[in-house]
Image (cartoon, helix red, strand yellow):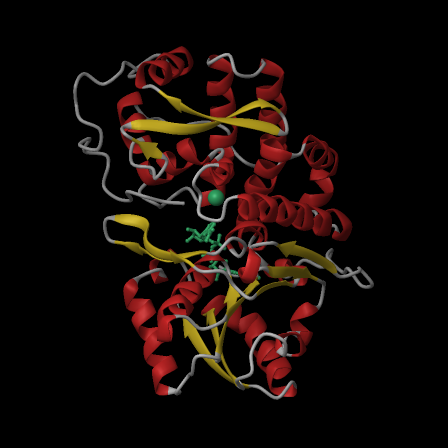
Length: 399
Ligand SMILES: NC(=O)c1ccc[n+]([C@@H]2O[C@H](COP(=O)([O-])OP(=O)(O)OC[C@H]3O[C@@H](n4cnc5c(N)ncnc54)[C@H](O)[C@@H]3O)[C@@H](O)[C@H]2O)c1
Ligand SMILES: [Zn+2]
């Protein structure tokens, strides 16, 4: 699973970037610096008074980055305890949380002891949730090692695990004390994970920043080659946009919903695929294009907006096509998103590149759009209650 190291990301001499996340007493910094992992120990001194640090990671990441992290922590005078979990979404369970809590209790972790999440979004989500509930909350720091985690999951304080009946059903809002990003870790990321992460990066351009979108249009070949400057800029700008949105609306009452652009259809497709086949970012890539197309159908944006998004998504190596599904299945899956209020799907729609609006969508409108695209099998469902379609097996709520 772990990819071959690609040499193009050298980044020697790149300046440290700091993005503040302003949330009153829960404020923290996102720090980005190539090679940061070697100095992680020194960066924790302001964040905890306890020598005990729990380093939660998965086997793939541990084989590459655990020894260096432990060395840095020991050098700075800490007493680290590694907690190594199996890789992958299946680790996001309450059982894993119990294991982490057992380890913390066994090693006599106290209120000031700190947890460090070294890994992708799965590790960040479970570590944050364990930190939120151990002794009613201990400090934690995110050290994200995937593109998805560096631009999205490590920032904003959503933590949690999946339930048998739904993804991310159990969790807490709990902010980290810092997010420490070492982009050099991306050198070993499997290419498929890298490309999937680009979907989230493109999303930020569409929802908030046309200039950034234009930068991505220009630099996509360089990003695919992991060239240092565009990679650093893409991560930093994505973090800035996420930080701004989260600071305006920490608990997703309204404004934060814009981060869900591409995810209404994206999550539905992931769920219909049974969380196999498509990885999250790949589903979001399709969602970015299809939701723009739906916005155009509703008269909210022009065709040129759809075409720009579609072109960038394809050039990034992502698909834009909905694989064979009926409208009934798709609408049923869309109904199970957390963005559903009173039976109406609350969508996020581009009006131009860099600006989106939040609006509910009714079933007949979505059905007419689907039919215009796919024809066959696209008639609106005839009275079946949302959620009772047999294709729906899993996942009721996601972020
Ligand atoms: N909390 C949030 O706001 C938020 C936002 C988006 C996604 N998420 C969650 O994040 C998870 C997905 O995160 P992800 O895409 O990072 O997946 P992941 O954590 O499963 O990591 C993907 C794979 O890459 C491996 N890996 C990680 N870093 C590596 C590296 N540097 N080199 C080589 N291999 C490496 C991992 O071992 C794993 O096999 C989902 O559970 C999703 O729900 C949370
Ligand atoms: Zn996402």
